[in-house]
Image 1 (spheres, one colour):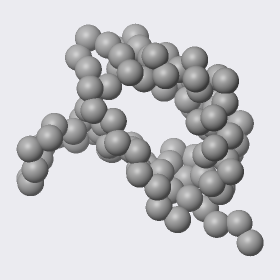
Image 2 (image 1 turned 90 degrees about the vertical axis):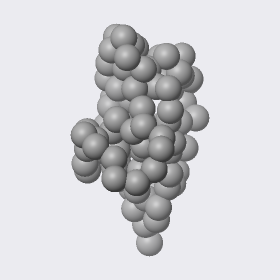
Image 3 (image 1 turned 45 degrees about the vertical axis):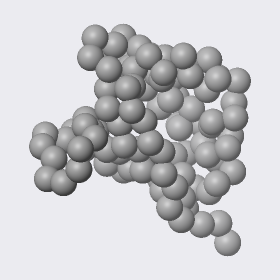
Image 4 (image 1 turned 180 degrees about the vertical axis):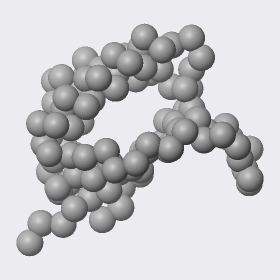
Length: 98
């Protein structure tokens, strides 16, 4: 039996890097489509109740299994996107939950 895996992404966006952000996200969505991953929720954070680190967005993505995650993030196409990712975000945390 295959178990879905949820990816939780916590990010702070670099101001002025909208072009890098759009390039990264457009490329990532294509890779997600290739493995039938679905963006379940995108939350744009408007205020913080506890904590000191700024967060602009939180996303939850469902993958059919861990192999699908590896297929996306180990791909040559994703390796090309890394420079845009690094430009677009000042903070990026990616967590997995099965």
